[in-house]
Length: 254
Length: 241
Image (cartoon, rainbow over all chains, first blue to last red; front, side):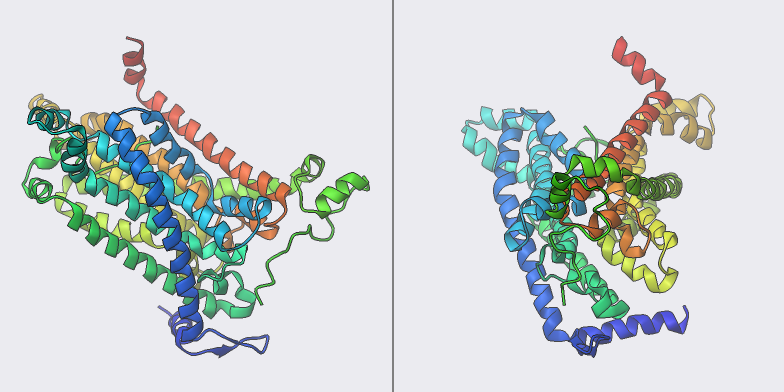
């Protein structure tokens, strides 16, 4: 804990609130600029996540409901993990071009796999006995889906959306490579913004990501049916599968 | 001045050959097989730097997370706080973590390795704990009943039975780390990401550097799969029988 280290962080926080003169003679930083970067950052992330949810949730739920194409739903997310995002952005810049749409598209591609896989896993792992009981009670196929499978899968589905959102907000940092001015600007243009600017943007990005994670975690808990929460709290429950949901999910390749 | 990002042209010094068609392709920042063949050398060092970052951080990360997992299995109350801490580490974006560490550890491999190790923790720790937890209680009881000490039970019964899940965690950690290491250049640690970012609009460059990263991830995944087969001979028999 040297004073030098602390003053680095103090300088960085100062730069968020008041503009500083850069080596190039221009003013950089300041609250207005950082609010601008942050709003662009959140906007491009939001567009990507909303689009990804609209595409991946219905497909995942449908595939989970009919219980087929497991290989497809699961392996898409494995392939997705291996591709470096920077390479993906670079690929799009090199082959498609720069701009807001382009970045949103890359982030969309990044967001789809976890959402798709979780929607599939959540829906398909609902206990078959529970589904059969619902059918036996005279539920239509649509009712089985909306009143039994979806509520039981909700926590897992939200888990996917949460994972994707955190990834997308984190990745939007490299959007300035495609000329979209997110919080990555001070990080990538460090020759203008200097170490303090870099550090300042890193602090803001980290805080935003933690906030998004926390917020969606709250939403996830709110969307979990009361019965599942009770079962999870009672001791001994984690050893057994709970309505077909794996107790605490661990990730599995292929 | 966001113009220090290279625009759609190859930097100077790239035109090593005088073949006009080839020169044209490079000048337009296109995908040029000839250029790739001639300039492949430049990717060798970054590639091995990338391998170094990945292998070292996954190895150290596995040792730490496996130890923490065993500890949390024996001392159940530790599971929740350790999960919380590793989750927060995992949530902080990698670029931000690289930069947040700079004032503490400076530019270079140390910073990159610390951040990359931090990211492996949640994945491996969670899989170790879940794997151990899913060992049937009857099996553990039998082992204890046969006179094994709790430590022997852990090492000879529970860990082997949890291996599929533990190694699944290792595989995911490896491929995730390859991806994250492409951003290690923000910590001044080079790697394939530095090559990608240096000429991000030059298609040949992006394809080669990005392709090498994907190849590395696949190779490590296959290696981990081989390790899984070697460590779990009974699984192989089960498939045949």
